[in-house]
Image 1 (cartoon, rainbow, N blue to C red):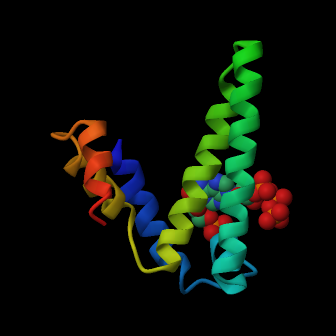
Image 2 (cartoon, helix red, strand yellow):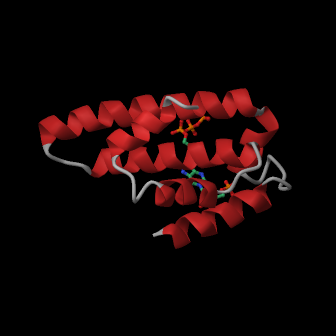
Length: 110
Ligand SMILES: N=c1c2ncn([C@@H]3O[C@H](COP(=O)(O)OP(=O)(O)OP(=O)(O)O)[C@@H](O)[C@H]3O)c2ncn1[C@@H]1O[C@H](COP(=O)(O)O)[C@@H](O)[C@H]1O
């Protein structure tokens, strides 16, 4: 699974030096972090609406599509800040041996 994210990380790295006319990702970088975060917010809203629809229709296809859009735009935001998807994968892996409640308590120290 993380192979896909690693591959996407490589593509996002390459797009930092691509021209905005030929690449959607490069066009987002050219517009700056605020625009990228605006897209993250839009995609989060679309994901929530699709999840609500899926609950009533029983069809998850739109929520999967919107979640992919959301993950993608969060990865573009991280890339803009100089991080790769591996950083998130590593953070999730670090949490495997910790319960959600323990993890929440550890956040109080931050
Ligand atoms: N995974 C994605 C991906 N998911 C979603 N999107 C784009 O994200 C946008 C979603 O925004 P919206 O639904 O709001 O559509 P929109 O109205 O066109 O967006 P706005 O003009 O309002 O910003 C669409 O343009 C999608 O095409 C993606 N664009 C690119 N990728 C990956 O990034 C790679 C590099 O893409 P380019 O930089 O375009 O070469 C691609 O090969 C893919 O692997």
